[in-house]
Amino acid sequence: MSDISPDFNNDTLPAGRITHLNFPALIFGILLIVIITGGNVLVCLSVFLEKALKTTTNYFIVSLAFADLLLAVLVLPLFVYAEGGVWSLNMLVCDSLMTMDVMLCTASIFNLCAISVDRFIAVSIPLNYNRKHVDHRQIVLLSATWLLAMAVASPVIFGINNVPDRDPSECKLEDNNYVIYSSVCSFFVPCPIMVLLYFGVFRGLRHWEVTRKVKLRSSIEACRRLQHAAVATALPPLTGTIPGPLPMPLPRIIERDLAQSRLDDTGDFMQQEIPYPRQYRENSVPTVTYSQVHRKKRAKINCRERKAMKVLPVVVAQVLEVYAGSL
View 1 (spheres, one colour):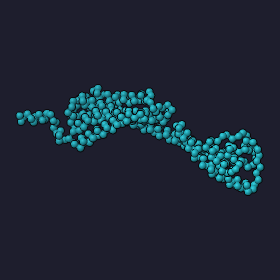
View 2 (tube, one colour):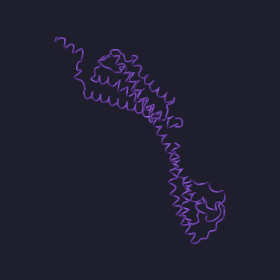
View 3 (tube, helix red, strand yellow):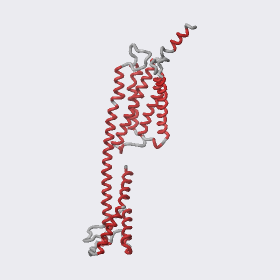
View 4 (cartoon, helix red, strand yellow):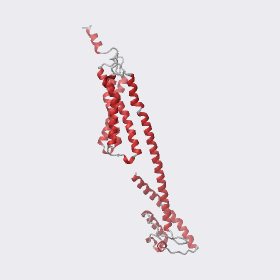
């Protein structure tokens, strides 16, 4: 009985299996699996349960989270199991593990690339971009992401990993040419594509910001011209006539403020009931005498200008609100 027991222990437990276990690495691997699984499950649930998060961009994020979730559930536990360096399962399980590893890692990177493509389309042609519902463009992009990832990983499951003199105690990619092929397809091709696309997104956003500032500046200048015109129409001319038709009506906010200023200045004459001065309607030539009355009127002009300038922030705020609503 004592002769059988050592042989049994040697057959069931590889030599040095217990002594070479890295327990800190095992604990870290288990914690990493739990964190990755919990985080990606929360991402998927938050998008599917919250109606406000059901946008096209978030569907790409769900696809990325699903790839990472499968990686944490199907791939990482087997790597933690084989952390000691000895593969004790059969080669079919090893090939399946390598296939899922390559496919899910490639799918994660391709999903990142698909997100960059989606952002570039949203910035470059925003009028043709559907933010709320998934259209055929997003469906094609998501399908291509997973199909290309499967195409990159499929040679492993079809036997490219079965090389002569393969060590059954190790689970790894055996064909060096395939290692180069998978590295190029999974890393070296998507990386420059993402860099170029995000550079295009940066340039598009920068151009949009410059255009927005120019439009905002022109709107402010138009408001200022409108404000000066409102001040001018609120005052009677000093000399000459006013040819041509009546000026266009003013915005209600400016008209109300200027009417209030006329009410404060004219006193008992009740000029606030007339939206424009009488000489604009009658096209008459008022006579002006440069006396003490003229100096008082000039002082009132300065007072009116200060009151009229109070209207400018309100007008600018309305223009900004209309412009923001049109975006």
